Length: 359
Ligand code: XIL
Image 1 (cartoon, rainbow, N blue to C red):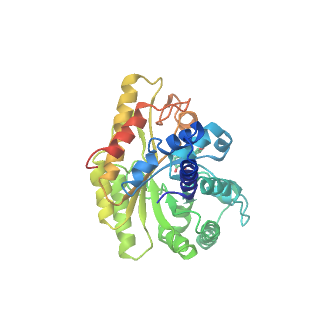
Image 2: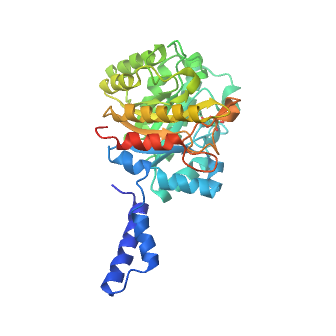
Image 3: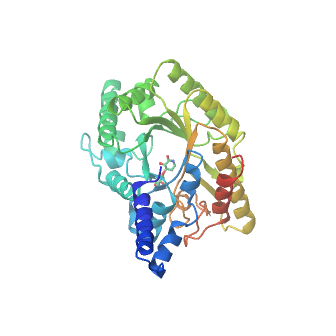
């Protein structure tokens, strides 16, 4: 299905061209340009749709005022995720006082451009408001704070987001539970409860657990495999597993990524690649950019190879705006478009994977 915005653009051009024909007019240069626009190269999302998947990219609120940049988001992608706008610090800056300004701005932008929205994130150890982290809470108090947060945020975005990262980064590298404030105060039951509260507030939205370093097989993804299997056995509402996929050339490609995606699908959940970027130590060079392109193509093919891998979201799309340089000093160049919004080899590699015969 085409999005309404795109459909209306096409309808307008078709009407202009057919009106010109009816009037017996030669197709004027303007109509000619319009019809050529209609035959523009398929976007990444168009190509992904041919496989029944979406291709999206995250955006942070300040980036929307960079209009050349934001236009690209609206044109090339079919989904977006707010980079920060729906996190706890933004949505409940004071206890019980909710602020949906940032999230709404992105939801409205997405609606205008015909993009769907992934909600990110209801619960995380990072970017929590200080009233929450500096308080001392009993288990009952924190449970009620968490329930109230999830219920309010999910209710507000009901029908506006198609999926939620309910719990973000809740495991350590060795597969033990991360000792975030919720684990330390409540114990591991907070995870199933969070999923149940989210489901109660919006029974239709897809509920995900989401983490990094889980793209390949290993202790951390094993822990999620065990957890999701148990949640399913306990009839806890869980619909998907989000693999962030913040990859780095120096750490190697995730081990057995396709098989890993497949084993989660076989548990009966969807898998999504939720925050893909592939960083390198700077400066970039042709060799590194070629390897990065190869990896972008590989991630895309690994997702397409598994029916329940529902879509891919990039964490940003151009090196002009990326979280990498500020968090990993000396690293960057992680995205398929460069600072000037020109395609890098990675962009062509993604296209090739999306158009490969048999993919
Ligand atoms: C990042 C944002 O992109 C930055 O702007 C912010 O300063 C820190 O968080 N994993 C996640 C995302 O789940 O929420 C993070 O986003 C990147 C790592």
